[in-house]
Image (cartoon, rainbow, N blue to C red):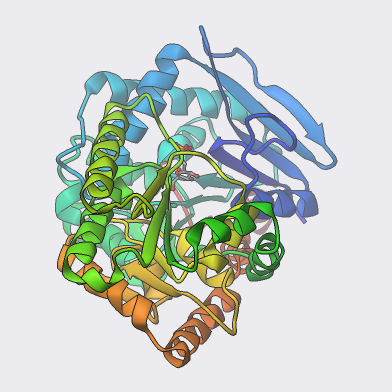
Length: 475
Ligand code: F6P
């Protein structure tokens, strides 16, 4: 089997201090181990100047190639264009999106640099899989350096509706860059539809069938690959964790009260202030629950140098204090708000202890916490998932209590419904959700994407048959 080259902003180098080894990292590593290859990207470190050469770490058949980014590159590419322009825009927060020419230039510069540093590492029959909004222009840059290899791109975030995307001054180059890939994968049908709308209405391209479009002189396979989790791992972790220290201690502090839980990176897209307001509305409108239920919100800090993330942190501290001040009592705290990070296994135990999982992003590509919540439940006594209709996961987990996170009354009513729901209904809803989680595992997601990517003819195969590649032109 030919080698795989994975490129992502962050690289999960095994055992490195900065590495995050979530399920996705493990799934990509497994694929790399099977066929050998390279994982290339930012090291997660910032230095005075961007490194001249990547640091190479070999672990078995996999080479991890990481670059330290200089302060200017980090600010303009990561904090700037990726996280102050594309992130808010892709999450429908035009009000927060900043359009800075300097940051845009930095974003393109880092993508060009990544292409230049990666190019010499590529072998003839490699397949490339590039991840996420940080690296949209990378494929086009690699094509410009003469690479005609099969290249796939997967977008982990939503792809915005046409009218939202048009607000981005550089929208055309961005979509043109996506068309430099042979395969472009999205989380949901909604995201794919938005992309196809752009191709049809704005780019004057052709929608060929369900699975491909032609635009900017290229044929691109466009498909939906909803990302999943490994059910078994989460289930086992939850069963173990609920018997251990942290979960036991948490249970003791509850004094037989019910627990509602939210776990999100501290990000405005996650709808945490709106959730707190809904919780306040719940306490106001359903007074019988006062003193009987607590909400625990875990929100590890994220992208702390970006001003919008500092602002939301201040806002949440204010709101949590206000709710506890207004409703709390000497022996009961309604809202526990923690910015601490917990191990996945500990969280799985907390999920299993809770009666209601609250996952109410204003917009989310998928939201794996929703799936992890479901997988962590005790099948005989499952909790209820309250899920935003604007999370990609709502497409599959339609047996959750689906809510509009902007509608505080509606969310408050769903919290109440979750707490009073019969065990029979809880089991029925959970059964329907766990079947979906089970059937769409992370491994299935990865293999479905790679199968499509591997069906793209390699340059060598094309040369030997004298045919055309499906994708022609440099985009
Ligand atoms: O959901 C998009 C994403 O980039 C993920 O790939 C990543 O795990 C998460 O956001 C965290 O973002 P950051 O790398 O900026 O901490």
